[in-house]
Length: 196
Image (cartoon, rainbow, N blue to C red; front, side):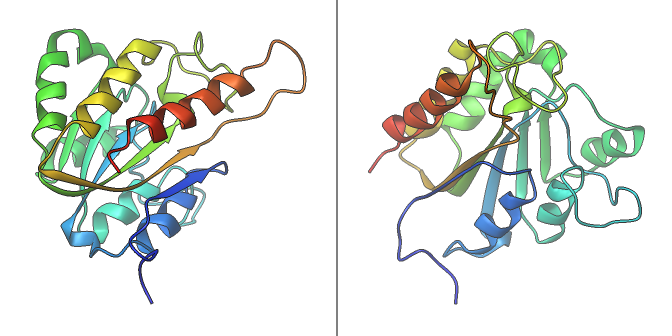
């Protein structure tokens, strides 16, 4: 049985493979779904350490099910992942080093998205100055204002149906100042921008 009774689903926590389960439970066929991915990593490997299922391959599994993928902020990927992203028409990648010149194009793409979509926010996608508590921080990530611009663009689009979202790969910090509040605020903002 698929679907969450038509309710918006928000997954919080875990490593990135939790995205697969959340997407797979939606009341929409994966071939009709666009996945908007904020992430430092492409996560398009075919396998990692001889395993098909991992945080490095989850978007490859999503792609194999027919989803369209819009990647934002990617700045760490293998040659094979780059080749796949470059040659696959269902993947559009806005690399971190291109965001300044492609920002207007990104916002327009999100604002004119049609059909059902799902947002996955890997905390690696944000700059470590915003959320440093991740397993492998990567410089040149999204700023807080950029992230809010993305949420606003998605939520203000009347032609798109926002089915769900997740916030993954955050590592809670027991020591102050930490950034637990920042991660919680990101989840709060995401829900605040949601068109109900």
